[in-house]
Image (cartoon, rainbow, N blue to C red; front, top):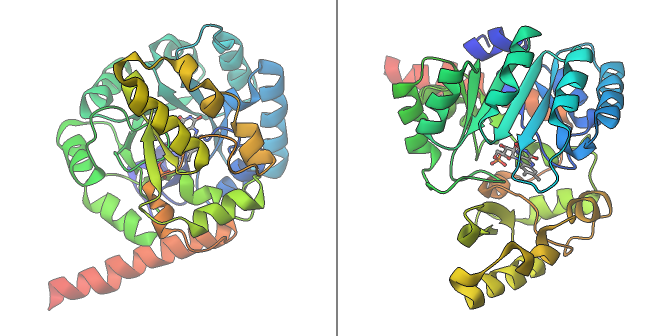
Length: 325
Ligand SMILES: Cc1cc2nc3c(=O)[nH]c(=O)nc-3n(C[C@H](O)[C@H](O)[C@H](O)COP(=O)(O)O)c2cc1C
């Protein structure tokens, strides 16, 4: 399938694997790229330019195809070495960067000068327009359904994507709630040029996370996510567990007085325990409502191949048949 996104990133299928903390290591990124999508290494999980350089080199050993690096800008008292990470990305010959969080204006000149394509993750039309105006090549439009940070506007993709299509000139991918060929065709119908998946890619054989994380996704339904940190205007969609219930009780009890320090135990430093050790109650971890559509743990190639086959069958048989009838 050829779209503006496959052409922009020089990939076979219009499917991107979004950056994911303690999931987006070289193994997953390379598997996605080898299967014809765009795999993405999560820069901040590595943390330092030296460790990121090693991960990029590892990924390059596993795939000859293009892959990207995610740079997430978070408010932080001790910010990561962003200039160093950017230099590592450029020196590593990476062709695509997925930015997220704050406006990526500070890193754009260096990335663009190196010929790197930038796709910025946005949860609203106004942020997408801003990304377009500062020179991003594409945006990833994340609806309210998404795992991770859906923003504070709560607009689901059935509205957000066609609104983005009405306003944007640069290509965009649909992100949040995407799982299969049905998602891809719907995304294309709503004006996107492809799709970005996060949660769905965790439940694959190659995702370098504990088996219990994958099994939790297969067991979960679309009713099992919760929104946390809304009172702090840092809303995150996570899979419900005992730590999340405890956190939500604190949010309820403290109301407007809630401080980050009140919930630090449930959110800070929990990812390695969950993703690597499989301690499923260690804290809150991002998960999309799409968990309700995850019923198995295929290889990345099986997932991408069947997604493309299903999408092509829906377009060529079901939809074309409807028009012809
Ligand atoms: C476990 C997990 C960790 C994530 N970590 C990040 C991150 O560090 N940076 C980022 O930009 N997005 C992150 N995301 C968001 C994904 O890149 C993607 O936008 C999102 O998962 C799409 O929604 P979906 O889960 O419904 O597919 C994360 C998502 C998950 C599920």
